[in-house]
Length: 506
Image (cartoon, rainbow, N blue to C red):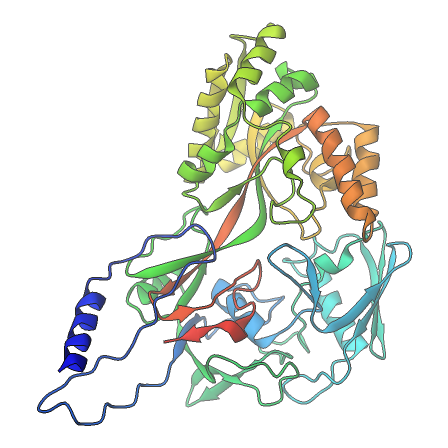
């Protein structure tokens, strides 16, 4: 009788569970779900065995599954289950060897990458240096990776070694090589990952490989795939509980709304939201003015309100999770209404007018721009907020028709700031021209090992003095899972299945 009373209490508790809103970070807790049990008579009948755990994911079955050349987001989300990279960036953006056993360079210009021995693709063919080189050369020519690999002049492979030659020294090249390696350029190439695409009577699924070289335990042997060719299909299928997981940008432009009972697992990205300043004309030409503006920005309020905690405040242009981030340096130009007001008064700028431009296509960014405008007015400036369409916004930046602009950039995994801040940088809309700044950017990019932290500290110290941009925050990506069905997730940028062996399904 006590057993039956316990079951009834447990059932009542489960019915009281409500839908869960988004959580702050990837440490979201999961409640283990149990199968319901009905009891009649004396209660001595054996309980039925629980149904095996299952997982269904979305895919566009008619689109390419190629991890580099494909364009469908659902299929690209599945890529880490089928394909593996030479290196994987962990939660602190450090490159962890996967298919590669080591990487070495004496000058940062020529890198030799040694592959692990004995790895095969799912069709039994071996992973060789030439195959890996072909895959990386395909990435160089692809829309997704051509900018990331813009400094590569050649890639070749022989035996189990891949040689990468650069035109600009990079002391952290492995951070750029979290690129999935596929065996060919077809729509369904084989990979070295833990699962393979299988088809039965026209239905596609992911089946666990018996000869996967890592040999780690997998949470499920077969993952069913359900068709979702449009974003509306993805939303409706997840909201109905038919799909167990989706990878989304909750603060993205035209982000779809999800409903139902779900958990949110946030992960760090390299998408930096920043305030750009016109260093060549107008009020922001002087570094002292730019420093005063930086101290007026309350990043925490922007993260908490405008980005609903799906971002992380940052006082430096590197993610706070990175070991390169120094909290003391980040606080140098931290929020201080009093210091900002005093500096503007000393500079006799109280009441002066500035123009802040923002792209209207993203609701979160417009909201953040409005908050920044209010913060600047609170310290004594008069702000004209110019809300522009995307094309007009890009034209204004190119023409320098602004004092301030709210920008967003996706940095590479090595946090190369040259495109944003160097004198010749393609994204240097503020037109900051500084020889010492260029030298420090180059020194940081080429530094290896222990010298990299020192080079980063030197660069960030100078950026605090000059304030050519004001870092605001790094956006988070989000994985949504059905409530209580999955636990143990630790997603990272580009791989929501990171450390899949720790997952538990119920």
